[in-house]
Length: 257
Image 1 (cartoon, rainbow, N blue to C red):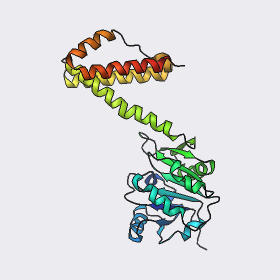
Image 2 (cartoon, rainbow, N blue to C red; image 1 turned 135 degrees about the vertical axis):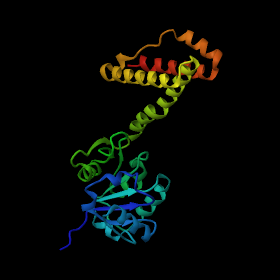
Image 3 (cartoon, rainbow, N blue to C red; image 1 turned 90 degrees about the horizontal axis):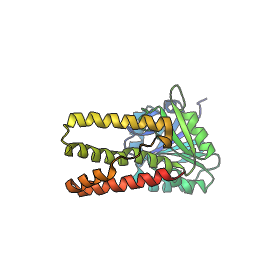
Image 4 (cartoon, rainbow, N blue to C red; image 1 turned 180 degrees about the horizontal axis):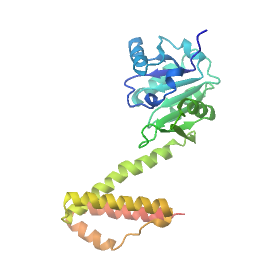
């Protein structure tokens, strides 16, 4: 007797950069694959070397875990169409594979009785560690699918993903802007670019080690700040304003318990 597959997939677009591509256990557990067209569903199943394409959601009724892996812009429409499917939602876990969206996108399915969650690879861990947020059952099903060998998950409660994303924004977009400003300051000082890069690398490493060791207490208070701001204001008022506001905000943040 053929073994019933326990995982279903709703997909669209390329999955090469998706968390799904790193799930080693998917090949053994994936069953029905649904996509905007049967041809695309076939292509996705062939690319994953797992599952089989379907034309409707009938086979999803026997699956305990359903992965939704579509481009973020397509998620509302795909989820809306899926929510209208004539299947039983109780004891089903619906997990959205997205770096930036969370289980809140699946609230319509939660209202129908499904457990919901989201999963994404944590940057820098080369697909060995994943963040999963959502209901307990959705986290459990994700753990069963993902954890193997060196792969593991970090589980957080439903609706808390924005705090995790804020940390990524702080250490990517915000940090990048600060490094760009620091690079310009060194250029204004007449320091060659190769030397500048080395100085910035050492400073960032020193700050990371200080934070890891002492936390808030390791904060290095700025020295001779007004002198720096006067020089910057004469050379580049915009950067002077950026630095003044940044240091003021940092000071206010560090003064809070």
